[in-house]
Length: 304
Image 1 (cartoon, rainbow, N blue to C red):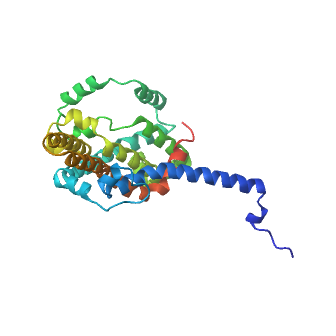
Image 2 (cartoon, rainbow, N blue to C red):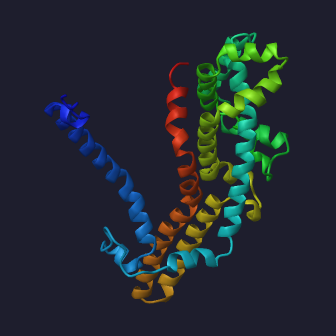
């Protein structure tokens, strides 16, 4: 009997060349995307003088942790870090509590008026009141200088809601609801007992999107928070950079040029250290939900 040729042997020369070209392009894209992140990390632990002079390219030069030490010496970075963590967790919880029920309700064909409500939501994606009306609403609600000013406005993203709605339409068959109704299951119990347990992919995507948005947000804190102790990490990083710039200018007028150059290099190194510190939670979170990312985005974008 003849042995069946393997898949590799049966591949044509054109397929092999095509796969090689695609692999090369994807490899190039990977390095284009990954190198800036890698450069930030190695620059944050390298000698600031060598970083400023361009000697750090592929490997760290002259191990130096002064950037991290200088940032942590201020005593406000960790406070801002935990503030941002608290705001992110609370904000994501509110986002999920609003997005998931809304998107599921609008995915149900027997929900009366769902098309009109969907159009109402879509209009808000293109038309908004603007900055001043939003500020007036936040002030009138008594949210100024409170955590609610950061998590209540924008607590539901229409785009995320539509992606989740499409996911429910695609993955929750009507037969499943009919079978649950025969067993005496109501809508609320069906949502919590049947829908949510099989919606891990879209929940992971929403957690990532909402979480990154809350973590990187600084403009709302700049507008609504006046107490320094309540500021998130992004605002603390801004304060540190501004303070460092002012102190450097003061030193320039009093110290020698060499000290000026050292402080300028240290300021640049602090920027890299701040970027690394602010991205640690996202880098830790993403690997755990990466397996759900492709499925959630693909399924959620099949149809509207």
